[in-house]
Length: 477
Image (cartoon, rainbow, N blue to C red):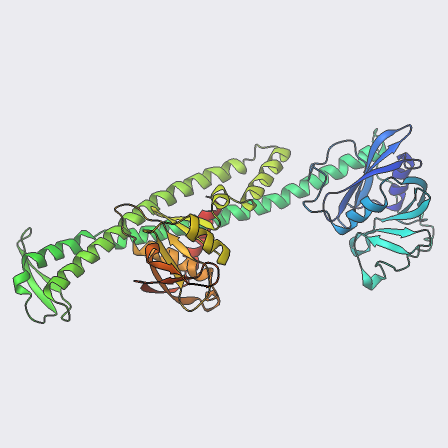
């Protein structure tokens, strides 16, 4: 709970505020600031303040903060910039607490210019830090609240003294430490526990999300593997047709031939619109595609099993109950910050780098990335894919020697091209693809604009589970 006005008064009695010079102001997050002072007798010391949280308080700091120990937000906020420009270098000439209130006013002398620093340790939206001039005109605030009349150029009015409430608020049970040190320990432990619980919830949610996605990926690839495990049957049929090519004359929808291995008759369907040789090639083509899909799925299954096992072990270690709270908090923060930071693959490539089986996909998300990938990261035998009739990112499938691109990889690339295009809202799109060597730049066209030749067409409906698997793998690249 927040400090009451009696406890704030007791803390103020112990602080060497009067006569201290403000040397530096630090903002840790949107609710907490530290004020670094120098006092001729007490030396350097730091006042920590927190506003609008269950731990709103002020006290002297004697230990480094557990959260954001560098003492800075990633980007300086407006109010801290104002404090550094207008308050640093000032000397505290008066300390006043509103009677029966959790409001503290420090009067600062900045080389002859008097300023009031008002610290209001209320709960919820009543909390604020306000700076006024000597005439109580508001110069800046931590939280701007026009509905309460709290905005720059407004006038700040000190609240009226509260009626005496001798029995309403009492100082908590004391220990042998100074009250500042006692509060620092109590609130630090409570805040640390809350931080642990919040981070634990995020880590558990991330674990469930990651393991669910990997399990779904494994199940999907197992289904693909099962569906194409009989790919040799296509070659067998092609070989049988080739051996009996003389029987394929005329328009036929099927043919019955003898299987030399089993000595039994086998019926093979034919496309009556195709010539004999074309029907044979059709079955060999089906064999090559099914074999490629099977081999790709086989690699994906092994990769999914390894990833699932790796992540299970990772989260078991991360959530080890034997870890101390402090060690767990540090590990949780590192896990969450690592996920938010760019991967090494992203740093090397201007777009996303995603793996689909044995193939690598490079994804440009805008015209600049498309152009950079085209100029420096792809070669003639790589494949290019793009949505037809909709602007969007390019997806490149890197060439793998002696490997044709399986349908599953094409679908991965197509889903990525769709989701990074203007067609995403429709959930489906027509796409075309060709090798990079069949692209030519449009003369005088926009950045990255190319004209394809010898392209093939593909229609795809957005597959959310496939997309989740691809983007999750990118996150853990």
